[in-house]
Amino acid sequence: MTRQRVALVSHVGYDRYRHDDGSPFFHPDEFDITLLARPRDIAQVTPGQVRRCIPVDLDASAGPALSLPALVGGLEFDWVVATQERLLLPAARLREAIGVPGMGTEHTLLLRDKVAMKRHFSAHGIRVPEFMEISEPIQAKELLDTFGRIVIKPVHGAGSFDVHMVRGQDELIGLQRRGFAGPDRYEAEEFIAGRQFHIDSAVSDGVPVAASVSQYLDSHETFPLDGQIRSHTLDDGPDLDSLLAFNRAVLGCIPWFSGATHLEAFLDDRGRPVFCELGGRPGGAGIEAAFRYRHGISLLFASILPQVGRDVPDRGERERMDQPATGWSMIYPPALGRFRGYDALPRADWLLQLTTPFRPGDPVGQSRRSTDAIAVAAVCGRDSGEVVDRLAEVKRGIVVSITPE
Image (cartoon, rainbow, N blue to C red; front, side, top):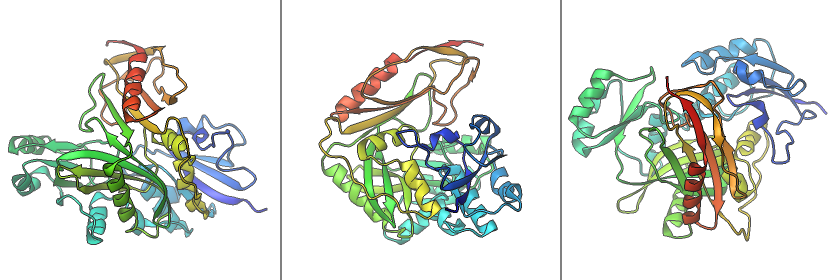
């Protein structure tokens, strides 16, 4: 059998691309992999896992999009795969440059560019916040005058980086003086008073084959010392039904899409769903582990399959689970300084994931992105209340040593 030649663009380690039983997503009998990744991830690849590795500076603001076609040179591929948010557009541009099938930039922009996506979904009848594209904060003055509170963020932002909640003209003028942190385009939008949710789905031709609805419990605006961001799945009830229906309506506006989606949405103060943004990729934090547990589907694998010409598995949620609720948390360092070690970590059969990314000697600075966490956990429970209690137990059980500098 002829192996499919795949260019895999990734900023997570290659060992993440595995099923629960440890078998690889890209079986070597079926796929010939060229891995484009950061040097530190390439260093972890076991000999024989992939055909070749090409180092890429994936942290550069514009570098990946500009350099991928030049880096692959005359190499021939059947598919280009990317599953992380910041790599979706570079991968789409690479497909177009080398002439392989898959989502191009026109469709990818609708799942990546916050202005383009709001225009698209609004035109299809989905309620979105009032918004405008801006090149400097002061251009949002009229929007702020209208709503009294707005959100300003990068059009291609990820990880809640450089998101600003503006509550008055003084804050807007202060932001104008400081300027934006990055070179991206920016947008300003109406602040939606209410509760925020994420809806994660495995999708086949614009139809969710499995979906989980979760409510955020914490602000995404800042990441304070000893703070956290948490969410938990909704228990049965009208809010769950309303948001599942909203998710179906949103996905129905992209009938050409198959893979994994991460929809951010609100229920406003009158209980009406409002679109925030939609990512055409798996959610981060503990979402992958929680979704696998609840539905028996890997969102990461579901994201890959259409990119190599295969169907998303049609499997629904598991039946008769004693602990069907799930939740996750990203826990931030308790102090700044130099990381020395994890002195204690929790253990429990309901702990689905505990990721501890810091290593002795790592500097611990103020978290600037939601992903700058000292630990990421996912748990299960009988209902949302038990999940929240278990997330608190996990946080209490993580003890770290950090030396001030």
